[in-house]
Amino acid sequence: MQDNFLHKGQRKKMIEQLRRSFPFDGSVLAAMEEVPRHWFVDLSYAAEAYSNRPLQIAAGQTISQPYTVAMQTHLLQLKKWDRVLEVGTGCGYQTAILVTMGAMVYTIERQKSLYLQAQKTLFEMGKQAIFHYGDGYEGKPLLAPFDKIIVTCGAPEIPQKLLAQLAVGGRMVIPVGGGIQQMTVVERLSEKEYNTTTHGNYKFVPMLEGRVKSEG
Image (cartoon, rainbow, N blue to C red; front, side, top):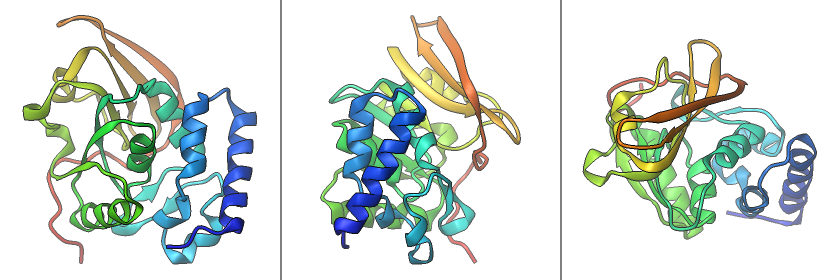
């Protein structure tokens, strides 16, 4: 996998555009400047890897546009060594950003082909995350609680099983809604008390239940 001066220049330009669009946390932008986004897209889309738009990946899914990745990561308020549950590994780009920022990432993907490809890509990058092939709605209760939870697909409502796996003092970032979702932050204040805020409209692929063994 190559990452030449052209790619690095395109990445730097992408970061400058993000910096002008919103006051993102500097550690988020530093991680996004380090991680080569073009490694996570199909070769047919490589020329567009650093454009600010979502791109198609395998299994009918998408890699979120850089602005959306930056915003979700910014809202997560990540700290080094945070235990993070990611629901929707996809191609692994968001996973790589979280790992680069020093998080211990547990990531779940329901599409078998994406689950396998993301593992391969991060292994080749030398970045370590714990991958699970399964149903994101279930989370990973045996590994809970998590300091942070990030959901990278549109949920019709906040899954109660994921709320239960959030540590007291933790944060969940999840897009909630039908065709258009509101980016939602849930803070767990105590065992039974949560605070919820919304942060603009976005459009994600839908969050679905179950596992997909293969795609035809």
